[in-house]
Image (tube, rainbow, N blue to C red):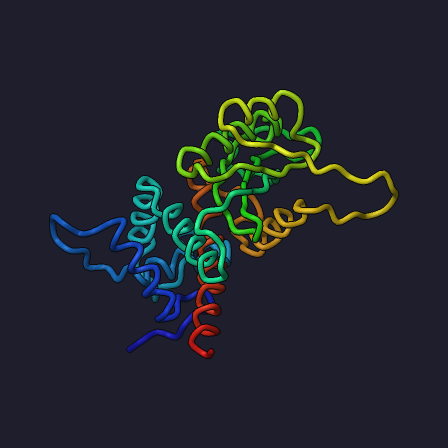
Length: 271
């Protein structure tokens, strides 16, 4: 008897997209083929990511939590979540007439309160935001889709943390020539980015006037943070390892892009 669907479940079309990427990145070439339904493993991970529940509180109609966690950790080690995220972003960009890989990005950080679990590693106090926990440093494209991220202690200053995420960006993507940032990224960092990667780091400054301002480009990355915070697992830092924290952000990004990609496919088929 088939179980009832959860709102976080992959549709048939969405699963075909993920399955194709997964088959390319993790082909089963040796050993016995897995007996667990990988679609249900992904559904369980998406459920946990959206609802924020504990691993052992996953509903019983999913595969055992230990099985789901095994695949979750294995895919972290293999970098599967970032690869799926990158492939989906490229497909979305191509479908709306953009180059697959962006030439510009926007950088920003978000300090998030920690928990007992996350307090054991890479945790610190952000004096500016008065938050004890971790900082999520992300770079997005001009549509707000996640390119890369690094999770580190909240006590690390933005300029120092930016070096880590920018270096990670250029490990896999060489096309970015311009990065927009806020006033927290200035000084020596601008010269470092130019010297190391031949890339321009441009600070978007506020105009000299009172009241709320929508800053060019800056609002895009803020909107991405708003999208991500709809996933309850990201409301605080629940993960022991920063690598798991990064995976949870990628998973939320994957879920968002799958929905949008599916809508783009539907629109294309309708026309």
